Image 1 (tube, rainbow, N blue to C red):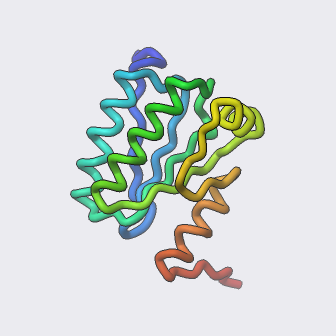
Image 2: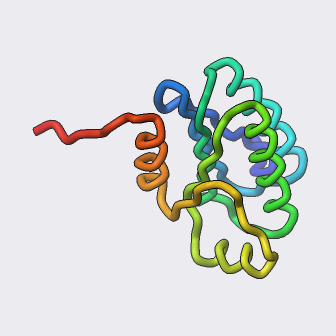
Image 3: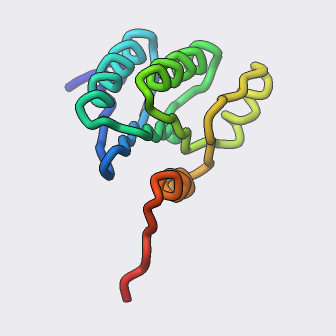
Length: 130
């Protein structure tokens, strides 16, 4: 069984040109570098215009984790993809304010809102079928 530090982050194409990255557990330097490398490759393969990074499952948000996330966001922007953050919790928001960090990307507390925003940006509409 893989340790929590060694767990792989899935990169899920949830729609054409939209990748979901659910980050769960601990985001250490090795894992962040591997995630960045795999994500950049996936962006090229899928021609992704948007990447939703869901941080709801991140155990702790400190300066090290924030730096990793910012580096990943910068890298995917250089590849022509737009980042969206979901899973923002009150404790994480307070930590980011305390660290004087502002993500220069849309940020949402739940995945549903991030999906809604992303679909709107892609001119997609979700409708209920009754």
